[in-house]
Length: 212
Image (cartoon, rainbow, N blue to C red; front, side):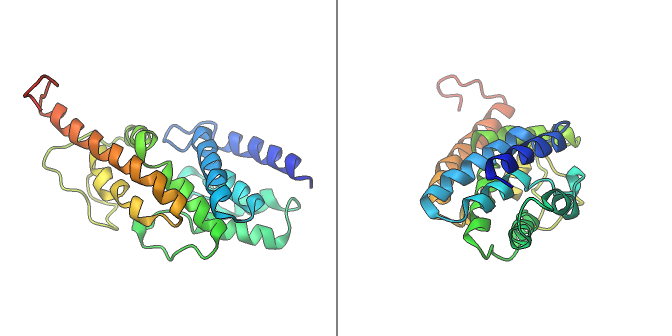
């Protein structure tokens, strides 16, 4: 199948899959990850076809969004070679954070898509997605005195603000490529400034001189 046609079909399929998502995993997230992945690939190399398709399909295999690896495999059948399908499936099934304990990505294509997905979880967009996700699943913005959960704990109470300590502040040091690390450093600083400001305003700071 011609690449442009295949990409168009993939866009339509993925757009439909994410059409009703309001947890921060909508099609806009997919588009940002694709753009970030292609930007990183210009600097770091890799097979652009595998990178772009993996970026577009990376959340379709996420069980919490109602997808599976089989959903992706069925879609790809007849559109790519068996080797390409295996590469894409290996990337998207190894992509998720899982408390930062997953084995490192073995290919540059996987490293790039993982970096792009993690970059979209930090910075200004990451902040917005964190609160959108918390609202979607009934978590409070902030609970003073509530300690962040330990890695691997998915049963205890949490909050949107605690998510920064539990995951987001860890992502910068987990970037695979130098290009992504450079982008992550500025986004990380922005999140630190936001969390500090959030806590000050939560306690009633007004932003006046001497109040913060």
